[in-house]
Image (cartoon, rainbow, N blue to C red; front, side, top):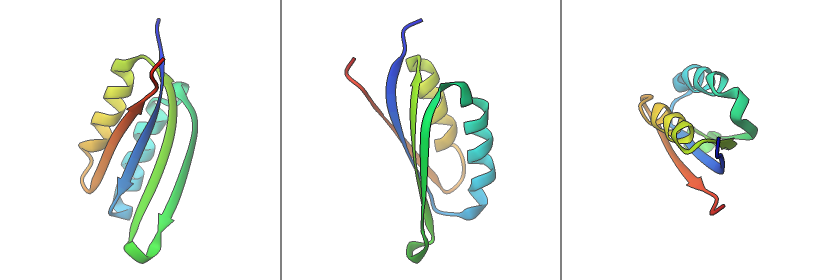
Length: 81
């Protein structure tokens, strides 16, 4: 199985989204290398970076599921290798 390293950028504009975000990340925990979340309190948003090593379809699935959560925007940046 070929995998790629990717960075998922997630911006949540509501604290209500945190439970669903964590559910999705837990579902794909075997692919997660690391994660960092930063609350941006003055803008009332949360910014999360997640590094994954997974097949491309899994990375797309994670990003897609995140993007379907209300008040959440998610994008994936893939490594070249």
